Image (cartoon, rainbow, N blue to C red):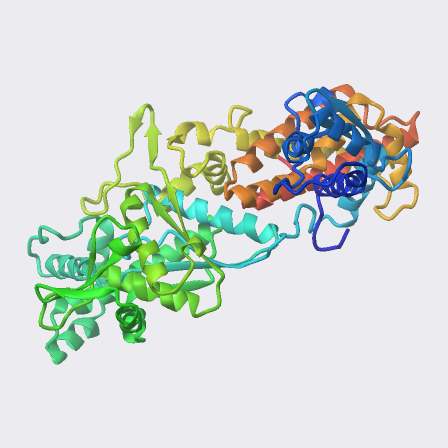
Length: 569
């Protein structure tokens, strides 16, 4: 194991089965029938059958024209177990009808992994991607016309959590926020501020809310003076100033959330730096644009879109559409060397997916490298009533208000615990509870309880052995015949595979489920095993080491979610 990444025990088992299959093929007739049967290793639904299972023999039966059981037995006969290789992670392999391989982990592998956790606590759980990529993830990207409200929270959490998981799985990830400071809504915001300042009625398409009145009061005189001197419509000048104030507030809110962005990109820079014009030229060169009624149209139906899309309007200045800016954004992003671009949008953007992918293909990019994750809406509920959200009317709860009421940790947990495509009824009152009813509190309490146990152990002179103690692995292996110890060890070693699965599925609810299971397993262990026993110092030392490894694993799982791991509650 390297100090910076942890090959999961599952990947070690997969390698052992692959090696066994390579040896077993020598005893089987050759086949010319094409087949693609990579070895898959899964957790069996019934844990009494083993730690892992593989159905590789079932998938090889047809091309090799052999019964699955025959192939399974051939593979099992060539698996190096602890009986034949003391370094093998596998204790035994059993063949079960109609051709499954049921695999049990060796105690020494569990013990060695537990010691590895204690030796490398900061990086425990990080893995090595089979094909590491440079990935750009753009998320939130709310227009800078008002503070982030709780409706924006889903995209913020989904993007931040995805970036954390992908980085832990070995990818290089850039987090990006794109804000529209070029469109009519910026002018409308400025017109709203000007109207309030002059005591006039806010325009029909304007913005309401206390934040607009605050900006009307605080606008620097030089902003209006500059617009008057240049002859520019004050709504545009004030709108740009106001949108920048909002953007700064959005950045502060996201930092409070623990959501950091590497790049803040504005739509205006895409136009000013020529990226939109370059994109249109590339579409022309590909033969994918035509003129209609004075407008320039992208022939997106050639690539599967349901209709062609206007990219330059039929105005005297041939003003680019918002979609044209998005096409320029694709060109600009790929110019930075990313291998994959991920957009996280609300589910109301589903109709936008086909046109963006069509543009990517016309520009010469692989549309599989342009990915959209659509998040389902969240229904925030308080006392059984839905909380309204509207920037224009000013009737909304800001993200800062939500975090101030329930805390960052609870908010992160509730969003991480559901698939991005699943709707959420977010119960604000439940998220505030400091009890086991609140799953975030339940997991954090397990971590705090362990910290308390370790403090008491130190006070009584029974601290766990040093992580580099040469006897530690032997001590740990010696207690794994006990049911509570074995169950806890089998849970803590799962973290790297949980990270692998989360990165592969690009979802994080598996991490919250795992953290909950680990907390539950620990509580059962603590109920059934006496950790501090002066009469059995070696057993106590081993159990303390196991408890310390559990604490690290809980902390790192919570860290993947951006949630704190308190040492007292």
